[in-house]
Image (cartoon, rainbow, N blue to C red; front, side, top):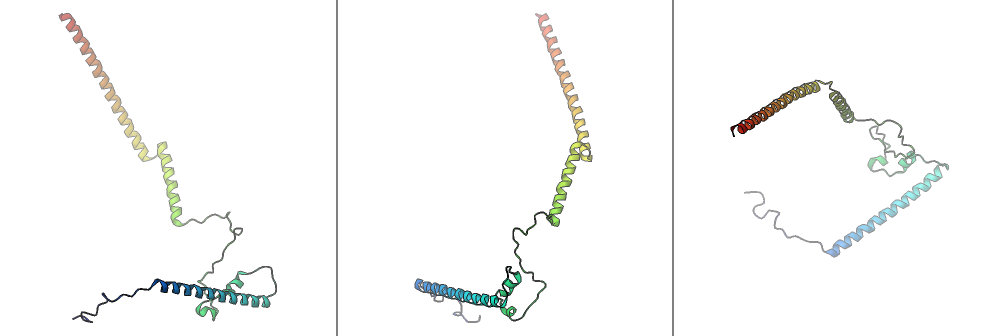
Length: 178
């Protein structure tokens, strides 16, 4: 017999539903808690800024290192100074710092795709000029087909003339019989 017997299943239990008033009360409490946390963070940030201004002499430029040290660190990072060479700090660049003149580095796939397109264009140019083996074979086939069509047209023309001559001969014979 399975564990728990027949009545041990999870289905068919009594379900409880949260009333709309309880949901509204929970949402209000959550909003108030978030507001309090923001106010506390702002107060801590203001206190840290005042302490930093007292310690440092007035300077016109701010370093990104100062901003990183001011930032709140989570976990052990706040207690111990950690230097991870694999972790690269995200540095935002200003529009004036971005250099548009330097050439864009292409990936291997992009380079191969461009080379493939250029090779295809070169082949098409040579093909149209008749310098490739395939173009030569096509031109030879076309020449054979043209000769066959010319011969067929000549034979058709001869047959047409022969029919006209035969019809003219019949016409003369029918006139002479009368």
